[in-house]
Amino acid sequence: MFDRGCAAVHGVMRRVFEPRLAGRGRVLGPRLRPLLAGPVAGLTDRVLSTETLWGRSSVAVEPLVPDAEDAASMCAQAQAIRRPLIQQARRPEALAEQAMTITAAEQGPVSVNALAQILGMSERQLQRLFRPHVGVPPKRVAQRFRLQEAVHRLSSQEAAELATLASSLGFFDQAHFRCEFNRLIGRSSASYRRARTSAG
Image (cartoon, rainbow, N blue to C red; front, side, top):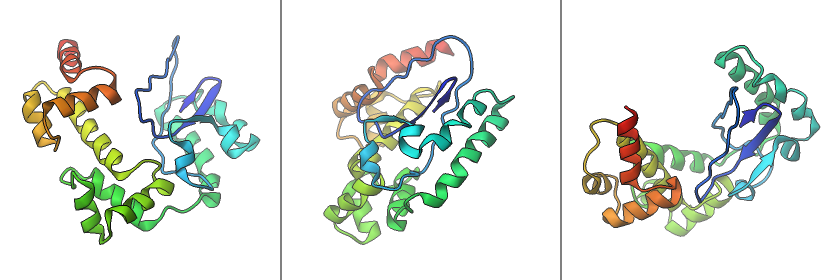
């Protein structure tokens, strides 16, 4: 995330995470494939400065990103920082990329067992694949995608009843959905829907 005077890399967070943005300005938060030389698991639940990860060379151009004239220029500056890092990054395992693509698909599997079968491996092998390349277990990844879809649907004026929504996204029941939504989003699904509906 690029902000004025600060640039940091955020790993996968397994709990509520709310960065505080004060004053006025612009922030760019690109979503990147890991550009690390080692296992991604080392970033889980952590926020590290770009200098810590990539050295002083990345710091010199960081201020150019939030100071750019518009969003397109900000993205171009961020891409300029990213380009040399790709060459030294650890290349992701092809199977890990395939697993993420399948899990992110709208009609992707909702269980670890289904994903493992599609990839032709055991659940244990799938878990071992995810730790170094994704940072969290496949179950957590699938759950995160489902909760992102839940947020998207709850933001719609035509959102379904919570029980129907929970069932359609593969949760065991509404209580399970409510618990996981609150754990990751930081508020209940009902409260989130009311807030989004009142905001128009």
